[in-house]
Length: 67
Image (cartoon, rainbow, N blue to C red):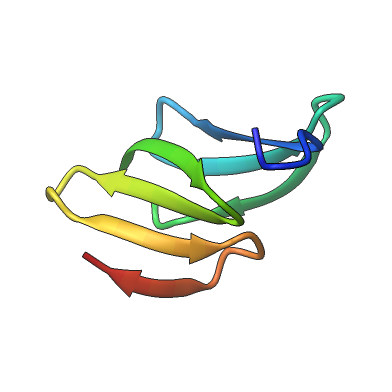
């Protein structure tokens, strides 16, 4: 859940990351299908990929940097 607990981030079995409202409705899908895990980091989302990298993304899905 994000800081105000209005959104939740979900990693699907197909490697996509979804941002959903607390009621379950889809806000957007982010990433390119290689996600293993995703979690909120303040107002940003840290996505662990199957290539061993971590992508830091804004809530709107835009890439900030790859670590």
